[in-house]
Length: 632
View 1: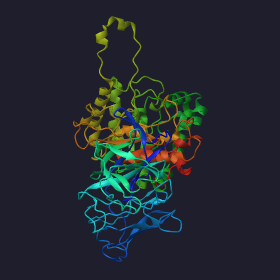
View 2 (view 1 turned 60 degrees about the horizontal axis):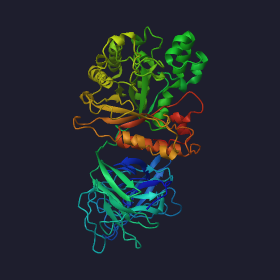
View 3 (view 1 turned 30 degrees about the vertical axis):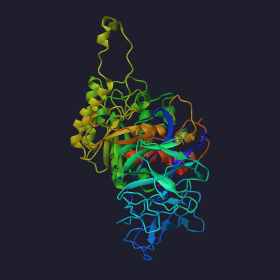
View 4 (view 1 turned 180 degrees about the vertical axis):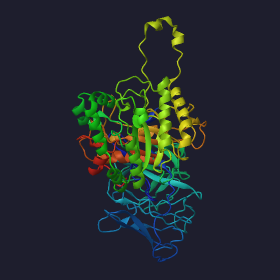
């Protein structure tokens, strides 16, 4: 039994593909007990490689050497040699390739991620297609980890004298082990193996090996003897896109799985990697403190700044907006960072007719410019209704800090609908138009203080109030009907989940016409909870749980997708390990990986900030510091 409380556990792909590179397991509550979990998705990769010289060796055991071919400007490719490129890998076909970080000798397949693991891959597959590899660079080793798991391998009895796994044909699977503290000498491995060898590896001479198929809801026994477990792996079976929660109970020494459904999202341009252009067209004091302090000291929101700052404020804000975001920024995002979308927060005062009579300056020309620049650089624009008339929350980023939440009341509601429809008419058919957000971080109004009139009204009558969140959904439904005719057919409407992805699942939101995204914002630096170690935050367990909810059967197909609309690298400075300069990279990778697996994409908050020392909130500075690898 494992008793050290300080141990970290990592689930890592085994032998046949390494398509799961060091996935940290985080704590969760499962059936009343505390266990460790992570998520495994069955991939649909085809064999990686390119047509190459074909030197057919003995037909019983062709050798397939995979060489990394890359440069500083591109991910390495893999070249398949020594076998018929139109045939199938046979039993005994070993994977040997050269990769960065492998010293002077070619690495055995598996060395790239491990400490001399030396595992070979063996698959018996039919009709595989050679493609460039979906290679992934691992931050732990700085080397490339090509994914060679095949698409639906056809496991059949192998040549006479070699192991013959008891596997049905045409089963897709992912195979993995659990490591203690990344050490290959300390593994958590299955005790009750099904066969003398795993479906994708050959047992070593000093370890019989084997595998256990994790059927959902059926715990399996696990062992952890130092130096034992080589070749003993778990597998989950299903079809490409099937997701499983893997649960390890160190107290009971058991491993089990839970099937989470199939959430295949095409690995195409619909996978959005983005940043927010925040603090620009909706000003935020903390992102540009000098701008506020130099004009109106102690001002906390844009309305106060503009209403008290007069002509001097209007001139300064105009100069700030003219220079803060330019064409060169979007060009850098596209060409250097690999960003393919921006989320553009905009206030109700964007169009001149809606800014008229207020203290705000219209921002329409800047939005027009963003669409122009985006179309020139190949970026898509998600337009976000960030600040509503009457305020959708009482925060500074609604335009007025500390005010009452009145956006759904009478005239405010009608005018907000008019704003959204006007935006849809102006930008909804632009080539770079990605989608439209209907509200941002909606807050619930605080109950009004009772008045003398309340004493004249019976208590039951005062209690008859419409549910606020039902009113929010009704606003979204009406807004969707008004804007949808002016949008591109496939453009999603983005619904803010108000910090809870399960908030609207049982309501009327399923009636919104056309595709929708549910927007979740993830920050670990807020709240009153005591700070935790940075390694705990790097597992992003809260984000994982928020993105794993299931949609009820009442939802029409296809169910809406999620989007991680805001996140950052900011943690509480008191967190244990905060002074270390390596956790930021892991934290970014974990959050974006979860969003890539379970959402339509992600948008970092923010692209940049106009102040020193806040790099955890600046995508650009984080890239320059090496915290965010590019291209993303």
